[in-house]
Amino acid sequence: MNEAGWIAAGVLAGLGLLAFAFRARLLAAFGYELQRIEPQHSNHDEARGAVDDFRRDGQVVRVDRARIGRLSDLDELEVSDVMVHRTNMRSVNADNPPEAVVREILQSPHTRMPLWKGSLDNIVGVLHAKDLLRALNDVGNDFSKIDVMKIASKPWFVPDTTTLQEQLNAFLRRKAHFAVVVDEYGEVEGLVTLEDIIEEIVGEIADEHDIDVQGVKQEADGSVVVDGTVSIRDLNRALAWDLPDEEATTIAGLVIHETQLIPDEKQAFTFHGKRFVVMKRDKNRIARLRIRPAGDI
Image (cartoon, rainbow, N blue to C red):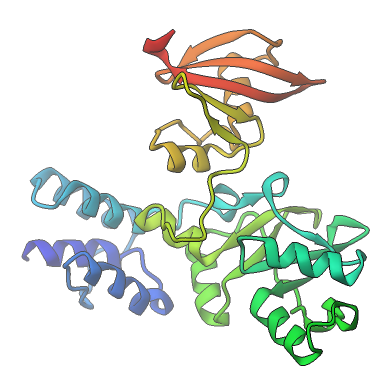
């Protein structure tokens, strides 16, 4: 079997039929042809083994083989691993005056915004900016005539334990791009988009509307000031870091996991090649950290 065939066999072992065409297009973008090859043992270990064997051959550009390997990881990751956490999620109170709601949505860099009433755990709709613009045009741009609940679509709730493979398949089936993530009690944990899953495969997708990660500020001295609620994955993507996210989701959680305590303000720790300084603590929560390369202490 040639090199492209090994890639195809390894990837196919972990693919669902519904997502086959989607992933074939992804691999085609990297110069490989995905064919329907029946593996001798159809299981995830063989898929990963085929990709690992190909890595050892050293015949594929590093970034391309990493992307191919991540295709096999979709069954191991859950939506909670890639979602936008509720603390960083932009949303709108549907009970606000129509003008305030419209202005907030139009000023947002996001295409879709969840609407809530009473509390963030009561999401009642998702409003698409394009639908809002159409409605405004129909009423002569009179904000007072806008009823956002009549324009909004019904929210789609998914469990936080849904694998990325399952969620990708569901997005494709429903031709949807956006879902609200909830825990076992139905409380909102965050949101996940189709783009979040694609970025898990191919890396960061930048466009002219992208903004810097909320809660992350690059300082002139080379350090980075980070809110404790910022997710490790977002930080890794934004700064090309490689901090582990197996035991913690947020950067504050990583510090607590590594130190096995809730540090006081001004305490500093070094691990994973970085120096972490606690800048602000709010009760039992790490609110803000300063991070710099360990060699710059």
